[in-house]
Length: 288
Image (cartoon, rainbow, N blue to C red; front, side, top):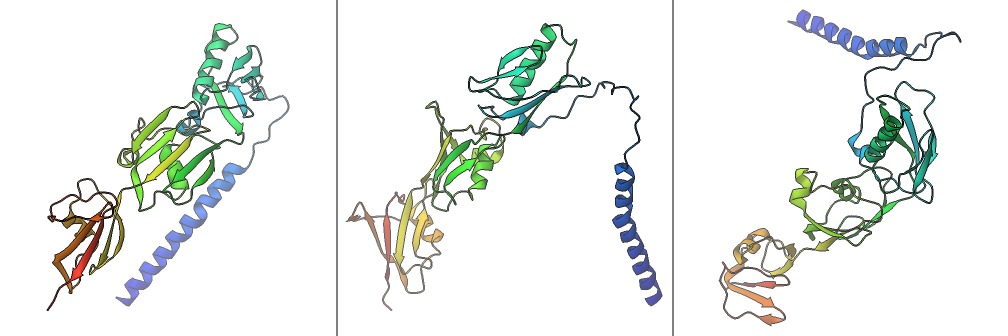
């Protein structure tokens, strides 16, 4: 048995060595550049289109952004230009073309169409890459971990921005409000955002204001296991509120529960009654 264990250990050590040094050696071979003479002809275009990045494709261009536009297999067409104050970029052949407010994908299609319609290229495969992003921000306020300004240097979805600010606080509402720079107001539920649906987990835009309001809460004190403030879930009853707070202590009595609403004590109540925002529940002590 001992001999078998030794053989097994030697075998595993050998395998780890292969895994550790094998890829490195392969990479070293790949990294060695081929010697190319000056007489080497220009690269020939291939049928394979460049890979696209859905996040980068959805980025909305703005004034000051620097982009590089290229046509597959055409080294003569690779300008690097900046979005001007009038919202346009200057490109070879097609000259001025609007860019501000368009996504990378939209601009790429516009450039492709103009190059083809102008007769410059038969069927161009166009690539647009953002080289430098201008200082663009979204504002996140309310019940989030770290409210403040968040720079958007690429296309971010709403869920990504919320993650960057630490997510929602326990006291945060399930509703997330987005106000666009043009005044448009959008509202989303966290459950929908988390599901990943593109119509709910939208791309944010520079100038967006994202706000998470405080959720309806109740307060509970006295002979309860975990006194404090808690978020009210939809349809929460008094019985559920007691359970959410850890239940009564050994000295607590369900016959001595007082409910205060809008500064006044509620006379008659039932454990099946719904809890409302701002309710204060006090659990009294039972007599032995």
